[in-house]
Length: 362
Image (tube, rainbow, N blue to C red):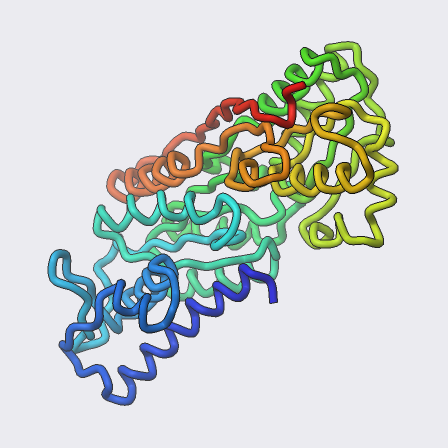
C-alpha cells in the first residue's frame, strides 16, 4: 500500500472507530470528546489526520465543534445550515506539497465557520466520479477541486456541469478542465517557469538540454511548452530523444532498476535537464550519480515546486517555488466570496519564483 493510501486509511479508520463508540454508547449524547491532541496521542496519528476525521464526523452530523469549548457528541443527527458545507477534492493529501495547500484551504474555511469534507482521487477519474456523485446526492454547498488528469479529456465534466446547474460554486486549484467554460481556478504560471528554467541553464553555458515531464496533468504540458519555446528562442536544439514523458501510473516505474538504463541513455548526453518537479529531479540526480555523472559539475538539473525534497536531495535542487499556502488561502477565499455574494469569481495565475541552489551552481 502506498504511503498516501496508508494515511488515508488511517483517517478513515479513525472515523469508523469513533462512529462505533457512538453507536455502542461509549460516547453519550452531549458528551465532550477528547481533544485533538489526546486523540492524536491515543491513536498515534498526526493532528492533521485527526482533524480530517473530525471534519467528516461533523459533516455527517455526529459531532459538533464549539469554538473555545471543544468537540461534543450531538444529541441529534442534524445537518449544518445551508451554505456552510464545503467539499475539498484533491489528488493526494499526505505527501509532497499537498498538506501545505490543504492546510491553507482548511484554516481559511474553518475560521470562517464552514464544515469540511475531504475526498482523495489519487489522480483517478473513477474515484473522482464516485466522490462527485456522492456530493451531488448530498447537495453539498460548495466545492474546491484539484483536477484529475487535467491534460486529458475528462468524462466527469458533465458532473461538474450538474453542480453548476444546482447552483453549487466550484473553484479549481493546480489544474482545471478546459472543457468547462467559465471555470474558476487558481494555478501556477507553469509555462513561464519552464521558460525561466531554460534561460537559467542557457545562461550557465548549457546548449544541449533534456527534460522529464508528466503527460497527464496540465502542469507538465505547461512546463514543457515553456521549455520548448525557450529552447527555440535561444537557438538550442529541441530533440525528442532527450525528452522523457511519464504518466501518474508510470511514476513508480520511472526509476525502477529495469528502466534505469533506458532513462540514462535518453539523458546521458545532456548538459542541462529540466524535471517536472522536485521528486523527479531527485530521482534523476540519484540516477546520474550512480552512473558516475556529477551534478552540477557535468550536468545541471532543475526541478519545480521548491518542496522539502529539494533540500534533502544529495545535491540541493534549484527549483521554482510553488505558492502552496497562499494558493490554498486564495482558493478558499474565492469560494467564500462566491457563496456569500452569488457572484462569479475570476481565474488567477500565480508566479513561481526561482530558488537557485547547488544543482545549477558550477
